[in-house]
Image (cartoon, rainbow, N blue to C red; front, side):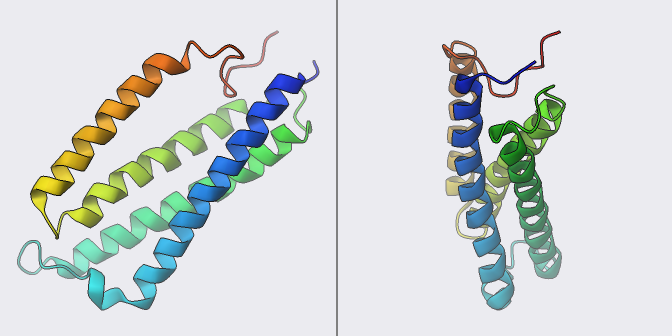
Length: 149
């Protein structure tokens, strides 16, 4: 089963987005580790170190996840996965990386303002619901669909 040109274009575009997200997350991770005192917020008494470790852990996992996704998507975009065996790996790594980034943004805003963190969280949920309702109506389908056959 060969990959169509439309599927290859979708994988190439998704590869660019994944690379961009991975670059953002790695840059943020390096910035957090370089100036760690700026991110040790006193949200609750005696929990500033645990909060910092939580932020670094989430960002490190998101970075690793998106890098692994870019490997799988580059193979799919190059046509090296003709049977579509990587579709599940690509879908899981992309969406867990995206959800991790969406979780990280309100957490980084939490020390500044609880209202802003909640506002961003609600906005993220609304955008995800809106996008998921529109994604099934794409003319070429999803780049993560299961292989036929």
